Image (tube, rainbow, N blue to C red; front, side, top):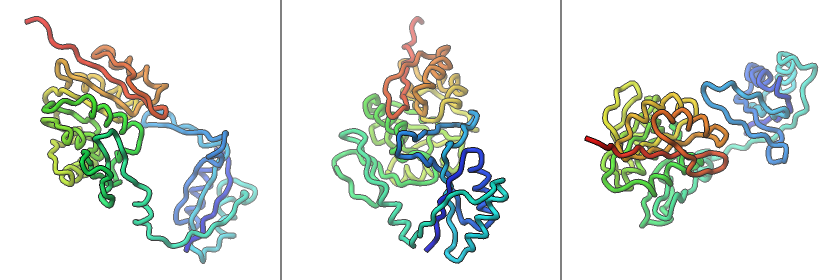
Length: 300
């Protein structure tokens, strides 16, 4: 058993208080929105290159302690280091020992992408054995199919990809999009990522699904053009990658981009305008999928 101490804090003090709690014996600390689940809930979005948003005005700091910890001393010392005159209002909850593997697994059920495409954790039976079932467990690399942007890209592959076409998945993460492309009949699939761990994870997931992906670190030169290019990253890196990704679309080929908030769509469209015309093709929970087609070559 552990003790979970839940304290109230404002945006200016939450991070400092969290750091002080760690210094005084907390095993872990997290910060979330104290107004979550109410009309005052305020979602936060951010990405590399963007100025970090301030924390919630009403933040909740959750610190986990051993049951024999001297909570009174720890909280008093942490509050003092955080510049508070007194310990903020708090309450304590007991956290019982659990089978954490089983609990984690119970939170991930099979995900239906389309009628013929499912994502199924390895510990689950496939709901539709006749469908294309991608076996993918939550891991260190981004992309389990639960995020709206991943699903937007999977839906595009399921409806856009023709058998035998070549696919480039830039920012492959777990490899889920490349694996889906291979299972949907792609001729060749290349995945690229900036993270070596992601490349390794994608290779493992590809083997588990019985498909072959050509996987490259982003520092490796990428050659050739592809019938389908997909990138599920974030707005700023997508903007910087515009000339690179556009150069790898084959004549008549298509591109789909996600990881873009609806309010950011025009920025990405403008970044790609010198190379290819993009449009907002779909929307899910505030995220968009942008699509474009490279014209067929004309003339001699």
